[in-house]
Image (tube, rainbow, N blue to C red; front, side, top):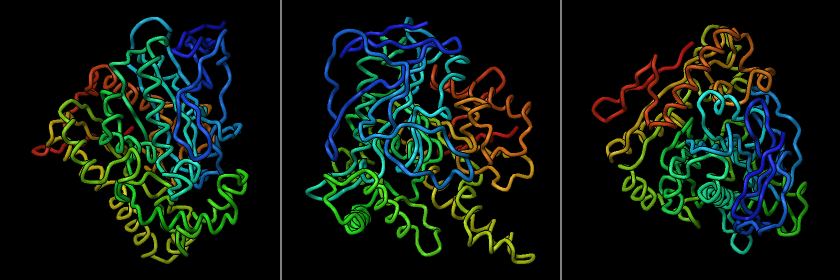
Amino acid sequence: MTVTAKTTAGELRGREERGLVVFRGVRYAESARFEAPRPVGSWTGVRDATADGPIAPQLPSRLEAVMGAPEESEQAEDCLNLTVTTPGVDGTRPVLVWFHGGAFVTGAGSWDWYSGHRLANQGDVVVVGVNYRLGALGYLRAPGVSEGNLGLRDQIAALRWVRDNIAAFGGDPDAVTVAGQSAGAHAVACMLGIPEARRLFRRAIVQSVPLGIGLGDARKAKRSAERFLAFLDADPRTATVPEILDAQRRVATVSAGRLGLTIAPPFMPVSGTGVLPSWKDWQRTALAAADDLDVLIGTTALETAAFHTTNPVFRAVRRIPVLGPVLADAATWVAGATVFGRGTRALAFDLSRAGARVWAYRFDYAPEGSVFGACHCIELPFLFGDEQSWASAPMLDGADETRTRDLGVRLRASWLAFLHSGRPDTEDLVWPRFTAAAPTVHHWRD
């Protein structure tokens, strides 16, 4: 059965799926290569929105050995589209806008991994998954070619679309929560200090934000751009997408270092560029608006195990008798604390002191005997998608289905309570707030 919804640009036709209504491939903006997004032109008649739109051009993720491989999707530069999953087009429900991770070079909000069906069914909310430009096409900062931060501009354009249109899909534009994991969480953190973005949401969920790498450094962006243009050996404005992806891959290889241990992405938001203020201005804006903000923020217990476990250097270290595993585990813990833990805790402290209502967590669960442990991305299958979409994820090998199903219900219940009230409390769980005086962290275990 199909269902229609009328946006400011024209009418869309979605489809009922498993008791919900889903609109796919909804264009929220359009753009040319290396240009800022602009509003979508209006149309007459009813536009079909029953099939996923194209995702940003990308190569396979370095985390496929951990998460598995997503479904095959059409890739195209014209990728500024989103997916809306709603219990119905009537009503006024809280809205979750999801920004996927993937080191700013991979990922798609339309993938089955990030389906909003379980959240929408369990908690009567509207879920919006966003596709945006990635890699050099989204984050190259090269004078005369691209100003940078175009992917971030895309995300803000998606939030503007939500503000203007989500009521037609049964959502409340005044009850929008932005959420992201990894690179998506980094984007959410950026938005806390961007005035035009901050006005577009009420609450924020920040999962595994890599603030240890900073907001984005202009000098590093310049070095990445120089390498990219040298490897491309063509005009980036007219080069083919495969040529751009190959040059991007070569930049990533060099940036990772000889041992492949550097995980900071070469293409990412850059502070003091375009919409993203300098560090000081970002901090000033984020803290000034904190007293009107609810935040749910946290990490997993062993974030960088996702990167280190498959790294040849770490695998060699682990084979050293007696001390090898100890050294590898220590290095993984230190790297996780440096890249993810300390920055997450510092942001929670700063926002709390400035008046935000903050709840902090750490996701400790991992299947017994897992070689990855409670690694980066391990919480995602408990929030999004379903058991089938995550069935081939190596990080879940050995998981007990009954126990993980129960954990998923409880985790989603807290996230959903936060969407509705700004507090993650449920009937079975009352979270103490994270404050400077009492920096309490809730631990998620099975």
